Length: 109
Image (cartoon, rainbow, N blue to C red; front, side, top):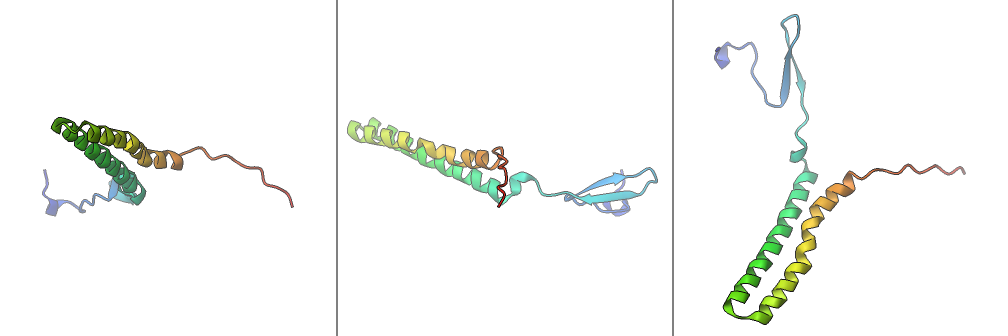
């Protein structure tokens, strides 16, 4: 296998390479993957934030119940249930973005 210095061109991970029938290497730019976009990172971040909040409240619920504070545990259990829709914020944003668009007829003036 030839070393990098013996190759006719260097390899760049942001490009795709194709060798034509004439033996010439052609390269094209590749757009970055969708999971690197700011919108996708926001969706993942919001989901992670919701998971941390719900998980933290659930942990406090268990700790309060284990320590014998049943009324406090009941309050934190209700807060956990109330916070559980936070887990849907990120996926709902993604669903909203990819919803089917309705075509509205244009009004004539």
